[in-house]
Image (tube, rainbow, N blue to C red; front, side, top):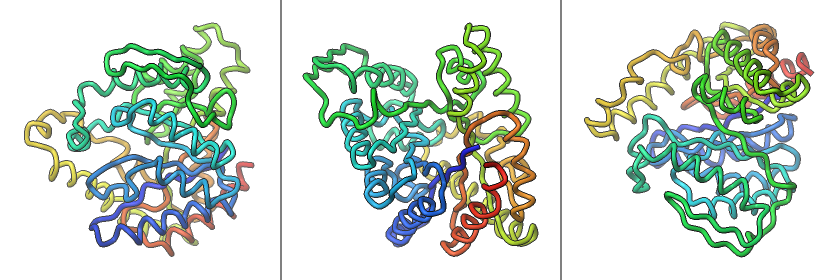
Length: 345
């Protein structure tokens, strides 16, 4: 199983932005030295939930200051991007990193309506924009004199430059928030990114993915290849003892989820808040029981076995939860790399 770090750094006030962004770059560089497979970047705007906000710009900084670690988006909110500008930016990062970029894409946040408003985008268009931009990306890196006439974009492109470093182009992987979207990836022979779910739901969705691929006439080798290139997200805090990890992790996790929820209340309109029926339902992402793994290296290793047993190839791990200090995060990362990762390799 491959392990990666999800850089999703919280900055509560503008005065903290510089320190948090600087420490996030330092965190990516540490992960490169520790042997993590990938560092994943989020995209959220205007609220301090993700301090660097723009994964494209930040990916360039990481590409220029690391040697081996891959750089992925988890995810770029495609409703907020122009497809050609996005494709160009990916091409530049792919060259800067010598082929270390993975393009994780999604339609955009389900609850932060203020992000769409800030970019002048109708959130009801987000799914359609994602579908159209996927169609464009599948061709634009490999096609000369590319033309596209769609619902949102009309494109007449002689040649995209620079050329991408990876051939035929960087891997593109879509985030899936529900079982039906995972089945869609299976039926089209694509791996997936899965958000935080209970272990039971994770296993169930992997089973559904396998069955859908089988019913679509894909063989077992192809199924296992796709699963090895799929990723699931977990929040993890490692410390020397279970109690220390719990004392640090639970408070940090609860405060982080509270901050993100309060931002929605603060910045969404009353009408938007009223339409968020799904937010009132308890999700694994918000639950200490299901959304957080804490413990000593031995305890964390034991808890990860259930995920390893599903056959999923990679874990996206959020280590720096909320306002957690750099020193605490650094210790957690080092303990995980030195005492947990070897148990799965």
